[in-house]
Image 1 (cartoon, rainbow over the protein chains, first blue to last red):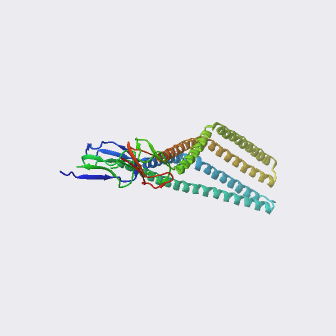
Image 2: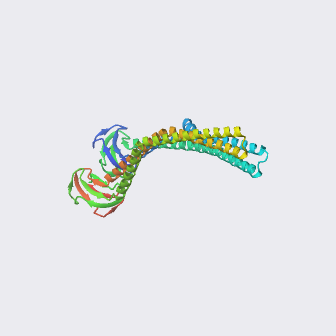
Image 3: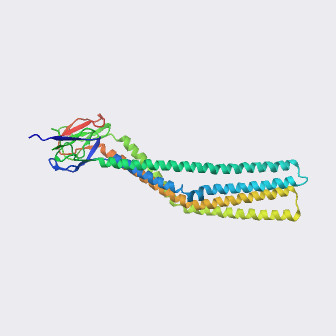
Length: 194
Length: 194
């Protein structure tokens, strides 16, 4: 009586890492037969996992507490300082201009100093606004990167799982390869006689 | 009939052949060695990078000196702020007491600006001092992860180098298909064991 034979071919190029059944052994559906090396996928997964942890660390510098204290805080202090200078120079200009006998160049000088202080205040306000926009963009970028890396970890796990070749049907195994051999896509891994 | 067909896992050149054609080999015997200079070079570069990262990490351990310097800076700025405040008070006092002219008035306002600047500098230095230990901790963890990442890469490259040593997967009689200096592509048949 002729038995039906199913050939199982390698889905990709890889080294056969282990063979867990004996030649001629009867196996059940879903039983692991051999494992192809998955070093590439493990490496990629590990890389993505480390990058996720790096993102966690980076995220600590993007929390509101950190930003308010150490990023926006000094910039806000700069705005306060520049505002004080504007107020001082405003008062100085008014004081100088209100006095009798003050030469015009001195009044012009006070006016120029006030304009300069106003421009510096405006720059400080703009810098803070720009920084907030930049941080918002960074947060979005990091979030997108996190999603991509998480998907990559899951995808690599799927490929690692698929590196264990299982019996698609129950039957008797005839091995076409041995552990330690490099196989290409389409090379015979084993046959199952139903 | 071949029991095992031995194929090249990587494109390379055969640098040495360890056994003669038609000899009996045992499982694990080295059959041939492929040129791994590219991977060796990559490994050397990764090792250099790892050493550099570890050096940075070790340098961070010596942070007490940095913290002490930050403290000294803060102390100096505090003294400076105090001095500016006192000078301003003296000037304001003199101005009110002696009803001085407009040039002295300008000096008072300039001193107010200087005091505001000194207060701002002190505020920023204080924030920087608080930020330093947090940033140091972040950097330390970041570098430690980078060291892990490079170590993983090294492991992967080393595994690729190991694969350049072609070994017999089983016992048997070898039929060798390559010689020294033969350029081989991935999947090229090195030999067969029957």
